[in-house]
Image 1 (cartoon, rainbow, N blue to C red):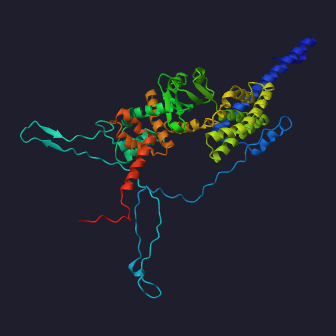
Image 2 (image 1 turned 90 degrees about the vertical axis):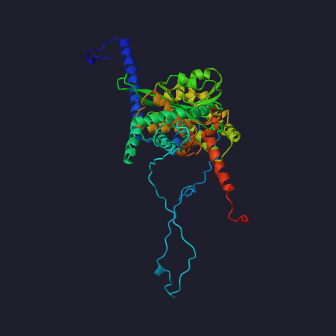
Image 3 (image 1 turned 90 degrees about the horizontal axis):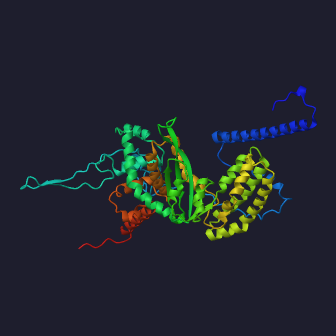
Length: 523
């Protein structure tokens, strides 16, 4: 609005209207300024600040001080017993590492007593253990197949069969293939860097060759991931989340478009972590993957899940970490109310921490939540309702309050079952491997590359979840899966493979004679 201050109208009603219009314009401008300040603070924190959402405890106490007279306080959570701190000494070296013994003895002229000159007698030894590194090396493994011919019939020639190989008539062995997969998808080493590393070892392997090996390995391993997927869909709860990934596509202005990696994490009884790739973030990706699933689904407030919940077979469980993050970001523009909300949420997490420190089972954790978390949630809901009436919905704090109220039923769902988690951090942690890898390999070559990456990420993530060394697992499985019967594919799942390896080691140790057992008499 432009005003000529030297020629204002004399009409009182018109002047009042002008003042009202100016006040409204000023209010809109203030709201826009706060929104821009909020966006700038979020961007600066994302780019330069710390990712932790911790708030000074003293500020949270000040935020709660104003509530003491307004409402009765919820019962305090049980005292938090700090977990026993682990020692800071040097951890023992793994027993399964190869040992190389190097003996150091005294010089001959030093084996006499300095006082009496008598010869010294060995009474023992001091052992100092040192961890060393032997660089990786390439080995040429020659398969010599015996060839036989009939001396009578010139046409009869028989050659010993070659054992099944991961890639038929291919150059790499199972160990080399496992190394390439683990280097890229566990250690985030792109293929072009591996190409240079191999060249330093004197072997030239082109990037296209390595890509073909990854493709063939993903095809071999896909049946295992399919079996893992069936197990995840049998879970009572699934954690899911997604993250973007640039995909090469020359049809787009910057030659890249945005694809999507999704993670689906099964419960403890079906402890598998599955990754899925979709070219877009449309709802058809989760709908296809979760087809037929019945149980709890813990995720963010992505609207693509709404159709899944509408069927009634899948129950929505929201994430308190997402709600907390919105209040934390709003603290830049409305510190007092944001910190009050964070203090409420902090009480909920204190209760979860107590359950974890006491190692409570699902039933006991459910009772603890009912006794202590439910009253906190009831008081928090009353506070949110009161604040919503006096808050601009489009402001940062208004958006945080609106998100919490809109998701309230799903946010409180974790009270219904002690097996449920308060947040979806398990899925977010699983996606970190994608975020770290994305900074190194920068983009996926195409949609097929995204699907292959999802297969290998699923196996590596599940191996790490079960404490299985990914290289040892892939080296063994790649040498067996090509000829393994599909009906027994469950044997190759990482947890079953780990159990089988442990049984082999136990049987080997059991079969070895004890040093106290006398040797059998000879005839």
